[in-house]
Length: 419
Image (cartoon, rainbow, N blue to C red):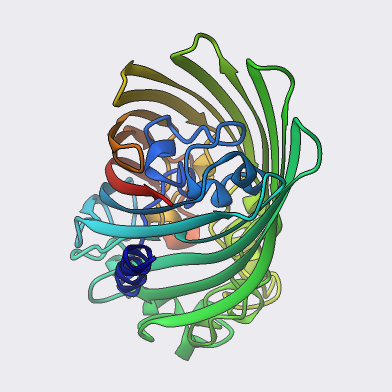
């Protein structure tokens, strides 16, 4: 127990220096847990470690008592190009003022008996970061470094119940803590209901609570099905940015849900597939379009119907496989594809949040040190994608188009201990 609490203390210490997870399915993570990352995020019907709380909490009851501690390093490349603008904004802009981000994660699962398990996970839900030393909005009266920084962390206690020999349900609370900061867009103050709280107000935080529920069922010895649902989280407002986000600084976490299947194809080979949906458009700060017509109608930044980033709902399709290459070595690989959340006519404001990646490829492995300890790693490449704007800069801002480009390297390591 002393060793377990030492690991927990180290994990909590690491999480205290939370930084942005520059996530790649919009601004959500492509996978929670390093093992899951090695399979491109497939996790709804395959239960690898205690981080299953973040994917499908019903899986806890199918696992041993264990603790998992990990860290993921992100290296995103964010770029924007403005073309054919009459106000002189044309140019190529590099949003990589900060290049590396580290996000720790911690989870523990305790089997009470064969029917009930309790767990706790602390992990990053997602985030977004841009920092442009050369301000892409300078032609519109903005000065200084431009960009945003959003980070979200969940603290999720969970319980799972195996109510038949082959089925289980699980519930986890999602206690949200998030931070946000925006810089270099103060020139848009005439279009805000509260110009003093639009930009350059330093970091702000908000909190909220929601839940995740999951079900799993073993159809036979080879096939497992899983379902999950995460509620929308109505978070406190970012008071320092009540002149930026719709409804006076409101920035909620959208609901998501999915289904998955895991097939034990051979004694050594598992194949898993998930389909997930994230309803970004239900969050006004994310889903509302940016348009001059809305501004002219009085729907200014920060108002009830104020402009947002114009993100659409997305579906995510994942497939992954794991193979026991040797008694102590399991290898993994996976691929995922997601719909494009940003419309071609909404690229202008999304210079601040260019979450345009649609394809991920992943590899990973786990080395069994002994019957109770293991080390895992995963590497994911968020494949470079360029989204070309289509009449994306309104005529009132000189017209033209903004093109967005992003790719990302993601490297994770974790340690697992059974007890």
